[in-house]
Image (cartoon, rainbow, N blue to C red):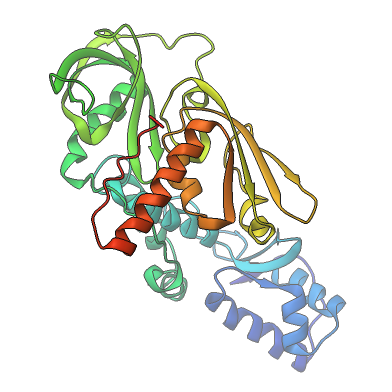
Length: 350
């Protein structure tokens, strides 16, 4: 260990405090703020800043600093400089971010969307000291993620790898697709995969089907086979995946229709501050109720969403959605009132 430059010899008590900072830093992988140091050691903030300057002069055998200071969350913090043995310069925040990404993409584990993240996390952990590594492991108890019924794509990891390659390199796919809406069941086509979309823990492809001569959105789990061809395609000028989505109401397309829903005032914390749809407009009514107005393309997924608010929501427009909610509510009540099984199929036929 070397000390750069000239410095004033510290007093015995100051030396003990400096030693304590150095000893405790490995157990603080997120860093130790100057305010925290001052409070813990019972010294003035200016004294803590002076300690930081003194520690900044500590170097290793190669003349590199051992301890660095940085701005984090509008505070100055001290931490040990990361050493990665040629594996990069991992920081605790990057490692935590990698873990969160792994959690969010667990439903595609085994594929090239998930596997490289696990490899990067392991390399980052390998570059840390044993103390830092202990603090940044056991993630399952420190950060947990709960999802609403994710699909399991592990058996299709190889298919996802081929799809991702085709998307990135703009190669046509020769695929077979099982459609729930086609009388013949399945079809084959050359397909231009523009976008791989993650929606509600599911994977979807947006692209052009040469068979149908139009853009088609496909559920990946319904793709029965996909072969990457050597044929390259061009993405149309002005194409945007956002034009094929409906916010939280998914990727079901249809004619544009205005939806107006009135919510009771106690739902305001649940509604305001969230992006439900790009066209949403909220208005507070007399008495505190909230009116939501938006223009969507296809209302198939709006129905279960508004039903989830129960009696706290009332559809004002369009009539087809009002009738569907009324029918669902009546059939639900009948099931419990009369003990019979109602057939609520979710259509909009009035």
